[in-house]
Image 1 (cartoon, rainbow, N blue to C red):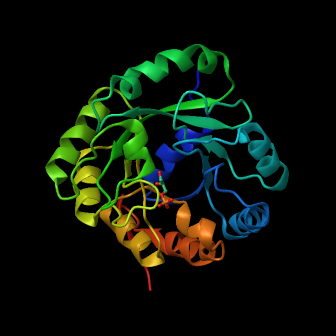
Image 2: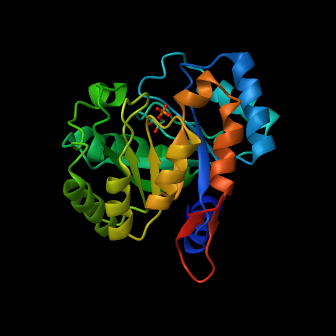
Length: 262
Ligand code: 1GP
C-alpha cells in the first residue's frame, strides 16, 4: 500500500519550478460559520492551494462535520494538521504526519505516531511525514504549552539548520518552521533562508504572518508554502492581497528561486 499520491508529488514539482503555495489554516475550535463561508468562497476565488485543518486542542468534536462542510462548498485539498492523535478523519485528503523535532518530548517524536499508525495505515489519506519545528515567536503559544517543549530560540539559526538537516536525513519529507498560532514575532527571514539553503525538501512556514509584505519576504527567503490562520480568520478579505503576494512571486526561468515582481 502506498501513500505517495498527488499532494506531495505536486509539492515536489512546485518546488522544482520555484512555484509557491498559500495555505489557509482552519482551527475547528475558532470557527464562526459566516466567516468560514466567506473564507471558503474567497479561497476559491483567489486560488488558495491547500487548507490545513487542526489546532492544539480541538475541544468541540466537530472535525468530521467541518471537513464535510468545507468539502461541500469548495474543492481546495484538505490536509490534517493534527495537534494530537485524536484529530484524525478519513474525510480529509491528506495528513501531515508530524514529528516535533525541535522538542524532546518522546510522545510527540514517536509516541502518538505509534497510536495512530494502524488507523493511518488503513486510511485513504495521503500521509506526508513532516518535521515540525517550533520557533520562539515572542509569546507562549498553545502549541508550546500543550507540547511541553521548548521552542528553538528565534535568533538561533544554526540550531534550526541542524534540526532541519537531522529531519531530512531521518527521511522526513517536509519541514514546517512554525512560530505558533498568534505568534507576536513570526519566523525571521534569516532563519528561513538558512534552513531552506540547507535542505532540499519542501519548507512550510507559518505562525504570526499578518501581511502580504511578510509573505513576500518569506518567499524570497526560500519558504515554499506559507500558512496563515489567525489573520485570515479575523479578516477573510485579507486572502485577496495575500494570494496576490504569492502569485506575484514568479519563478525565474532556469533558476529554482523566484522573485517578487512589481
Ligand atoms: C500555526 O502556522 C500556523 O500553526 C498559523 O499561525 O494562526 O498565527 O497565522 P497563525
